[in-house]
Amino acid sequence: MKNRQLSLFIILSICICACTSNQITPYKTYRTFSATLENKNYSSAVDMLSHQNRDYILKDSTPSEFEYYFPFLSSVNTFIANETVHYQENGLLKACLTINGYNSNKKPATMNLKFLNEKGNWKLDCIGIIYHESEDDFPQAVICPQRPEW
Image 1 (cartoon, rainbow, N blue to C red):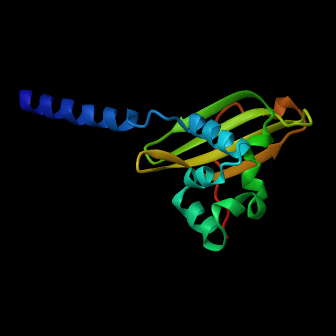
Image 2 (cartoon, rainbow, N blue to C red):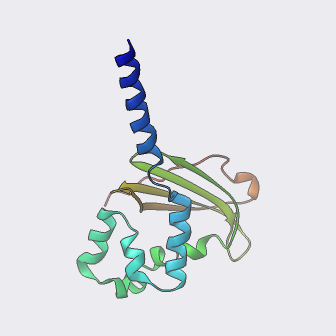
Image 3 (cartoon, helix red, strand yellow):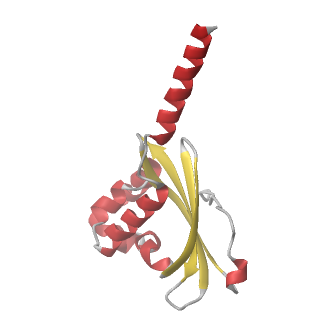
């Protein structure tokens, strides 16, 4: 019985360590990604993208052409000018982040982001933007965007 309890304790300890090993949250990753865009450090921004996104972006361009070829992705830091609240949900392999706030025109908007855990780091995989009629339309929980089919 003691061996079974010890085994269970070890398994639970490993699970807890695995779940807490990534101390950089998806929200912090988003903030870092936004800062790299503000500084036009596109090479670092590309490194923060999921493997699939990096392959797609670097297929026909270089990080220095990031802003030119990917204006939507390179302007992520400008979609929510005034953040009011964010919601986050973490799994082992995937995390989602929803940010409510106002754009630069003071219109209510929500940004939904999906991150993938690649080698212990959260990598940006998918983004969705929703513009609302009023702040009453803000979601009250995390929404995970789906990658569009190409």
